[in-house]
Length: 59
Length: 361
Image (cartoon, rainbow over all chains, first blue to last red; front, side, top):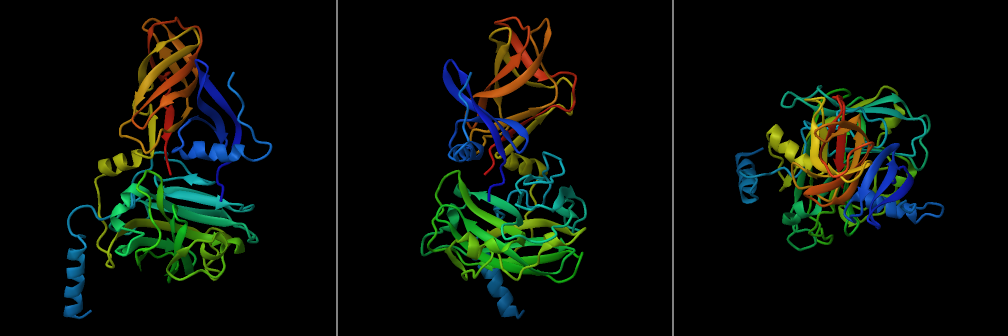
């Protein structure tokens, strides 16, 4: 029953280490920590498993 | 009720510890807390802790708000209004309201053991559509469910409902900060969600156990309204009066899952103190008002600035650098700042700024 519309996820890095994901969820931009207990992060990982969906690397 | 039966009920209430202490396992059951203060038209939250799920509806337009049409004991309710009805219900369409309880708050139910406790859910409800409605208790860890129903007898009239269920002696609720139990008030369900549900507790199948096939299709009625408030889940088989908590206490409970910082009080409210790393980057530490359930995601709206004591610079982005359940180290993108200066991050003469911290289930 997916109620999250996820678009354009991209890692953000600090000193070369990924620290969060910037993502559009339901037309709003969120910065999501890499915490498995965060339901948005868990949803992004599930979204990324679908063919065609990718979390972009950090700049 | 006979005197003996009445005494037996009183005894049961006392035995279950329902008198004294906290009884209600539901947070924001009186729908008082509405941090977002927004009208919701898609899946998401209007008042805190009560989530709207609108799945695959291609015609339906809804408006979900905090409302002041209530039973006399309350001042706020959750209102779901149909602006445009769903023309023809498809198999995969679903509309519901759900409240999700954190697992570690349900350990005293002793689910998954032979001493699992009975539960009673009570709530006030009002609907423009009379008939049978489904209500689902769903356990996340072992994927177990218990489907119940209630009936709206009179249109547009507040009615008090109570539903008592047995404890689940099979389904274990893990002792953690994840989902323990969802309580789901289904308003419309396509045939993918209806079937032949098992009685009482059993393994959950979305296609059999989510809703009753003979429940009303609330989404099909133009200008329909559904109100709910006074939601209480408690131990035992007897519903007791609603446990009214103070506004501040209820707000703190909600902020474990969602916290909104805003600049309503001052157009220059500060988010935090920090420092500039370079001309385009700053950092700071934000402490939450209460420990959150998980490290939260953040989203911001409005015009922000960073002020280093001599100049104010506009801020174009705020992101998570490092986050825990009690504080967040944030990064903010600015322009033309002077490196290595202390900096205050806040609203830039804008009383509509918000930063949402979200750790909901």
